[in-house]
Image (cartoon, rainbow, N blue to C red; front, side, top):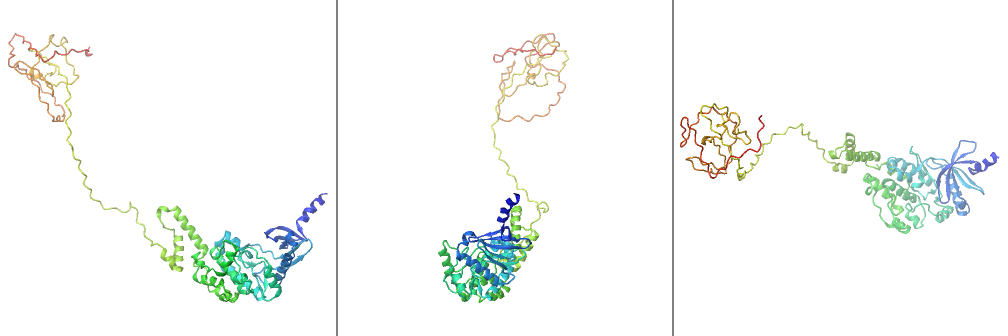
Length: 499
């Protein structure tokens, strides 16, 4: 039972005595498979017609004709034919297995890698086309899709379904009826006009292919197939250097000559193309080095924006090398200026200090005098009493303790105030005394003098009675008359805590 279940699966994975290993490409009428010959290690490429195409006699004839052309060719740069098989169940070609990408894939994914190996590709493809022309065939479908190249720069030309014999009825019959696969971007003007095909026809298509490898684009584009074909017939292509400044002028001339409108204006054959290309340098600078330079410049501009356009030594060397071969590029290089040393290492000369503008003092009005409380009158000492403190010489301070009558060491009654003990404050009236009229000192707007450190008072001299108040021995002095404008001494609400 197990063997019966495995047999259908094994049959589905085999075509005759070839085992399927994978799919290489898929087309409209055929597919390309990687196969291995049964009971061997030999691997090949199988171009197999699809079931629908097998029902079309024209497609069957095209495949068989392609096998016949491949069998007639024998060149290292042309895919090798192995066998053509026509059975009721399958129709296919067995070809050399060449594992490589086509040029179209390089254009889409690694155009710089393609440009760095462009010389090898052009030389190998030119030799393959030259071999076909010498055998009397014109490829008629030269385009990036039909050129294979591996990492070792080995090249194979493939797909001979549109190939014609230069002078033959069979070739003209297939060439006039077959549909051009892919795009019309590489078709020659004489093919559009249905004129006879010549080796110059392949030169035109190969020139369009080289143009695309140099620039990454094709020279003619159209919104419709008719518009595109009309540009092939009449429009003048721009030089490749318009799209890629790294392309040399001599390469421009060679490519523009290959895609001339008239076959007589092109090179006569592939041998002339090869001879001209040997003396041509495709690029001013190696594409890979130029790419590395651009990457280094982009990295330097991103990581060192504060340092301007200064580059490291490797990038600077690469730019210098490019300037040697490209005078126009050298003109665009900025002059290298030595950066100044840091400010800390360069002492600056002392600059004269600018005179600071003196602020203009605006006179301010003097503040109004603060009213001070009337000082307490100092009692007069009794004759023969030794003073404990120089009360008469110390100025009264706000809050200073003043002994009240009745305290120890003080007379029981109020003592008269002597004129010398009065300490008038600014703005306060001076009480009238006997023989002295009451005065009010004038208040001036002059600011108070600066305070100085108080000097200890000297020992007070004996008080002398003033005029009009002579005290005789054994007689108490009469109390002074009370002035009408002076209130009685204020009483203390709280006694000082001295006990």
